[in-house]
Image (cartoon, rainbow, N blue to C red):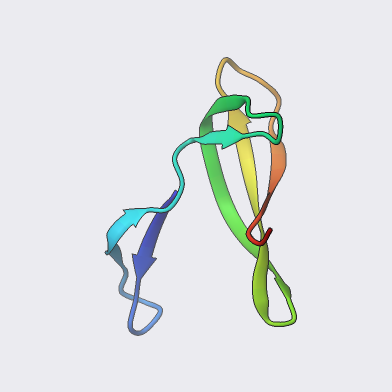
Length: 74
């Protein structure tokens, strides 16, 4: 997942440090799962602050797709 920037919402360019997340999920038990796709990010805001990042995910080796919820606050 990469970060892009835009001054007008039309023209986009990669941010100075574009890598936001690698294509892997680190589960609560410490297991790391590699994925082929981690996309369609959406934020859930709690009191106006980002609290959870939701992403669509397709695991490697032809697994079933699923949504992952990544907490952004402890």
